[in-house]
Image 1 (cartoon, one colour):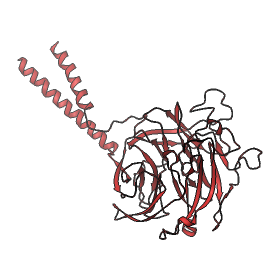
Image 2 (image 1 turned 180 degrees about the vertical axis):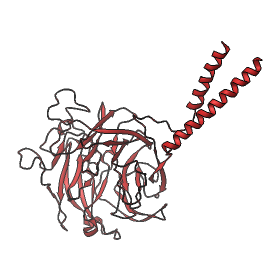
Image 3 (image 1 turned 90 degrees about the vertical axis):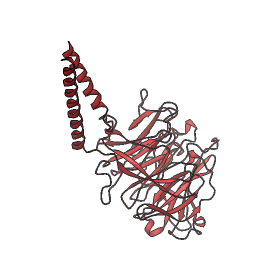
Image 4 (image 1 turned 45 degrees about the horizontal axis):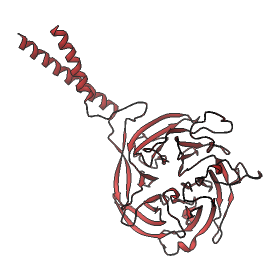
Amino acid sequence: MRQVNRARVSVFLVLVLTSSMVIPSISAASEADYRLGFVAMKLGTDSHEVTGFEFLPDSDEFLTVNQYGEVSHYEIVRDRSITRLGGFELSGLVFGRQCAVSIVFDVDYDDNGLIYFSYCPSLHEMGIYRYHFDGQDYDSVAASKAEIFLTGDIRAVRPWHSIGTLNMDAEGNLWAPIGDKHIDDNAQNLSNPLGSVIRIVPNRDSGGSGHEPSAGNPFIGVPDHDPDIYASGVRSPWTASFDSRGRLWVGDVGWHSFEEINLITEPGMNFGWSDVEGPCTVNCSGFSEPLLTYVHDFGASSIWVGREYLPTGPDRYDGHLDGKMPYGDFYGDFIHMVEIDENDEIISDELVGKLPRITSWGQGADGYLYVTVFNDNPTVLYRVVLAGLIPLNLLIAIIAGVVLSSMIAVQVWNRSSSDEEE
């Protein structure tokens, strides 16, 4: 009987010792075998409540913009420090977290110096505005303002569910996710762009303004349909990003039930809001399913989509981020990487790190990803690094070593117990 009891205790000790190893908790279904870390790089007292940032093309210089329309121009120097070079302000802006200011450089910025900002000029309106910035003359920026796009709903009482992250494709089309202004009947009313994703060609002429709908938009020439609309049926799509295959990922904030990411792969897709929130279960004809969803609650209620990592030199992440898109939640602290195949089916969806209140992602000329967070105090820029990685062969060696040590300890304990009995 004593030998049976000793055997049971031996097994118990092995289990305890092996389960107490200080190694990352790994789950094949939801947790990656690597971690992302975040190195804080201080900006300055002039930068707070940042909602958008973007690197100048092929440069260590970048612009940040906060919810008040204050734009700061920075440069990363000596790999670790940041220097402020100057700044300017956007005029005629109503601030508000749900009318987050976004920024994108023109595809031909090196030649024309054009930048586009999205913001709310009033409680019920949202717009896209073009500016000229040569990288040095801050005083002349304000006078170069031109209105490219403007929409809204007079019924709106707050600057909520407004305009999200601007993107520009290689052909020079400007993409913008447009919220429904917190008025449910807008998203399925295709006579206006509210609750949709638009694709337009901005006027680039000096002194000009306005835009044209992009060729190939699904509703050009269709009566009672807005020709700027490319996709519809979204609620509060405050972040969006292209992947390397040209698919637009849109993070759409939910109402009562679900946060969702919608993947736009073709013109005319309708994601169902306000008839549907999250996965469609009944009366689904004509609606496209979200790529992924999670439950909307008070701990996770404002989904964002980041930016796919595209190595331009040495891969800073050892291939772990290849073909994957980051996403998370402003009010949560989780960061996932999701990968999909050529059929737009999810291959993996893994937890890779934690950081709350993220507002925007960018990639520098140094090959690192960077993120900004919304903070009332002076903001820092976070460099995304690979942290806590344990190679599989090392992990196996650690486990084997601990198991072996456990077995030796058990044998010593057994012998000690035998000596005491004798």
